[in-house]
Length: 251
Image (cartoon, rainbow, N blue to C red; front, side):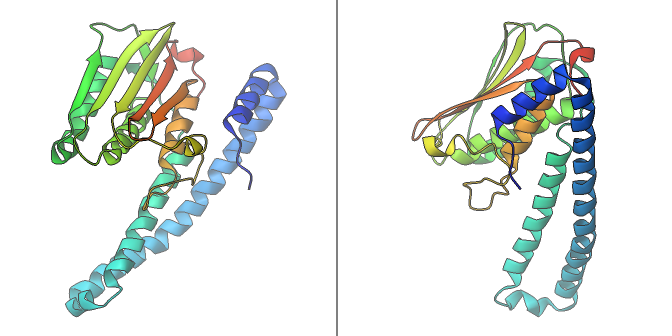
């Protein structure tokens, strides 16, 4: 299966906006795709749940299996499958939004509180750069929180020594800009064009869906995402979201 590039998705969005019949056709194709992927995930998740329960019972009744050479690896692989299914579900539902008013300042502090245990454990400070007040902003708070937790966790994983992460939230040209910046290892230039594509990962245990989910959620909000990175210096990801009434956001 050939995946659409960012430019191709932009072109499709423009065509959908211009042609009502084209919009209806693409919407129907998307709905069929989402339903199919949901059904496949469901059918895989059920036997996986049974396998997980069986493994727990085996270990409880026969503790000696822990000495088996590949027992821990089997448990690790099973956990990876569960994470992969969760990521597929999040990717599949990334365009389904529940819109409400969001206070950007409260949103930023909630993000920090959620990630504080991990930040403290890694001894990484999260610096906040916020304005005093913000105009009304509407979006899906759950999906957007998922987006920035993913981005901040990527920054945490990129830092191997002493480091810091900055979260910036400000408005410019009728848009809300939220940026995550770190001084971690950075991303090689040859990887920067592909890391937002599904199942592309350069992490040892990554599923390749984290940044794809981020991009999918941002596009569903009619937003844009921009990456700046240099090896050995760090990475900044900027998300630009429109300051528009609920009725103008594509759901």
